[in-house]
Image 1: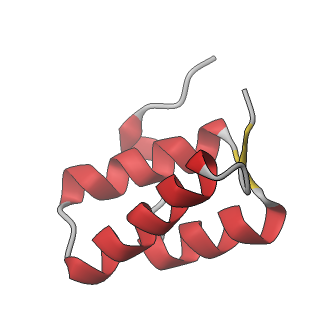
Image 2: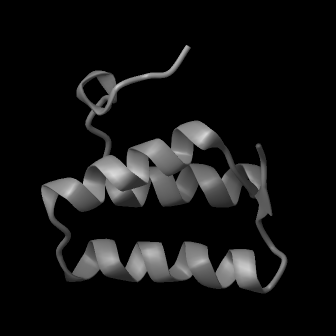
Image 3: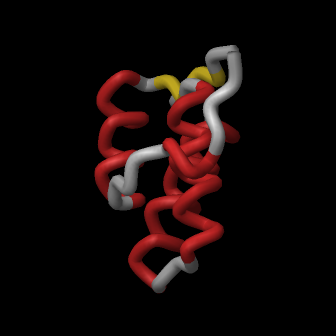
Length: 66
């Protein structure tokens, strides 16, 4: 069963990034939440947090969970 973007709760990009770093993994739900935030538009602070998550993935600090 898939979750539509309409049912994805609105959570700040900063809160999503903090959760990702706290658990050192990014889940499918985290990815859906980030995609939803991107569709709503991002400010400079949001870009910073997304860049930080991407760097964490590239450096092996964050595990991608399927």
